[in-house]
Length: 492
Ligand code: BES
Ligand code: ZN
Ligand code: ZN
Image: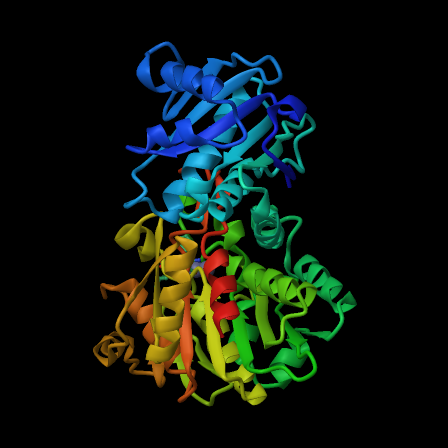
């Protein structure tokens, strides 16, 4: 993570190369009334930054040489109008600005946190945006290009030191969680295979109140989880079911978090075409989120109980692989016909959703990269979710608004089950020719949750970006949704 310091606004003592002044469009004049900076200085930079064209422009950044020698440069960051700005835009603007400054050799950046901005509450989004933008996965580069930022937050109002510090801590915890997910998702599948994922998971046991259990293929079969067993048959690594229990003393609610953990999805015998296989090392995003979120809860000593369930396999091909038209008896007792071996995630989740019910959780939340059609229907920045509980939906919507990550609820519509009718078994896992891939995938899962309050979130279109799609989402894992999940759990 980048280095971060909060200090009082005193340019003469500042160690920053540049003072970055964020202002909302239409509110540029507020710059003239910043306390702790002399009026004549403010007037001079205002004239240069706002009233003249004598500045270097980079998108919404305007840079000038500073008239005060204690700091080299001054930059104005023009944000959208305060009334309409979204958390996403704030993150993107700050992330982009800091990257831009870095590219012109300015790495020690002071950000003015003025009173006028405090009322809009932008600090958290600004710091998150910078953290999201500053991430790089460079483990396998011999030559590292590490962003070495130092960010100083200059408080105009020293009284806000405590609240700013609190925000800083929160952002730090969030970024740690996010970086852990991104690191695991970006890790190639020849390194992060099921046994390696298990290893990383077992490390959590060092935390207080955490128990980790790992079941191997033989045990999984013995326990009746044939769906998890069958999907892993095509790899010598087999299937692993990881269970993390975080049950602190006197916990309030018990939340089950289920995450799809396919360390690589070739599609199986229904092999994916070459292009569609790019990004499939990230098919364990759901499991990576479960792992990171429970670790975060343990570090913060959260008072909420959590059960993490992660079925981990690689969906590959050998002579033992499961095949189209196989019939699998799931843990629930329901039989499933395999229409498509590439619809493997829902098979893993079917047994996991049944298994977790033995813990009698208050809610079950599953996270997976399940339906490729998410990308077509909603693109990079919106993820769908399905739930059988309006209470969950309300809370999740609130969390989503606060985080700035956008989700859309899809209806739980029994009509879509007709596409999954099988002539051979109770249900089939996919349907050639049926539209609404998000709906059929979600409805399939709903058949395995009984009457439990449940939510399924599909990140297939959002996590793995094949190109840099925003200043805050570099190529590879975006970590989209983690912030909302953390907020959601906080709201319980
Ligand atoms: N892992 C994929 C879904 C996916 C696609 C995730 C693109 C991320 C990016 C999943 O296992 C899958 O292959 N789904 C199929 C299901 C179909 C065969 C019914 C899909 O959506 O194409
Ligand atoms: Zn698949
Ligand atoms: Zn998959």
